[in-house]
Length: 254
Ligand code: SF4
Ligand code: SF4
Ligand code: FES
Image (tube, rainbow, N blue to C red; front, side, top):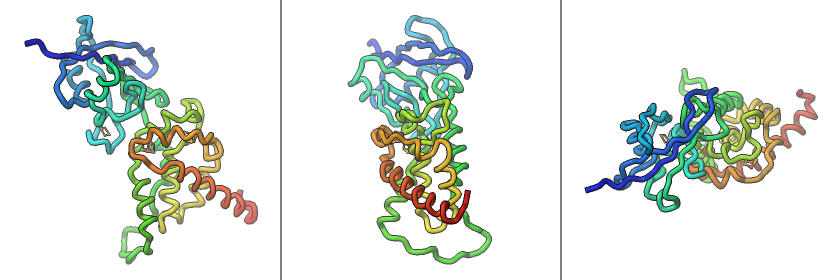
């Protein structure tokens, strides 16, 4: 009995500075495969559809349950997670599955990209709650259910980069921070203790690559796999920046 196969076209790049090229593989089909299991099959038998032995395809992944964001790649033209994207769904839209690395981040090798820019921006906005953990601080301030719901939604961000891949303002050669950082700024600035660093965050958000560079195209909202309320974040951070700039004007803070 012959095994059913499907074709996968992978954009490859041997190292950060080298040119990219495409290779096509025939992969044995099994029901309910995801894209990671497809790549694992290629890694186990790295032979192209025209019979050439090649180096196994390299990719990044961690959680395998759409939580870490590491396996984000562009599959059939959409930025999404390879661990939660199913082959059956992809084969319904096209007979060949096309996989390439995100285009807005430097390629390390093949489908593995360097997302450090996002993590560095989180450090720049002080994406944490400043607490002194050496003694009991007692109960925190009470929060409404609405406040908790909003922050829970923001907390689902997995720094995957889909919103930045889709954003026309975010390019490899500029400093735009993008929707992910605006959401995390609102996340920490709306926290009772996190807001102690709100001014520091707004200083960054009002600087180069900050909120004033957002073109409001809303592409980010369409693609976020965790459905973060990104429009709410952009509007909220914009309001905070306006109020803070008035405060800076009257206090003479530079
Ligand atoms: S609204 Fe448009 S420009 Fe602003 S962060 Fe989202 S995709 Fe980028
Ligand atoms: S906001 Fe959404 S798309 Fe952007 S990094 Fe976070 S989870 Fe990914
Ligand atoms: S491996 Fe973590 S999101 Fe896919």
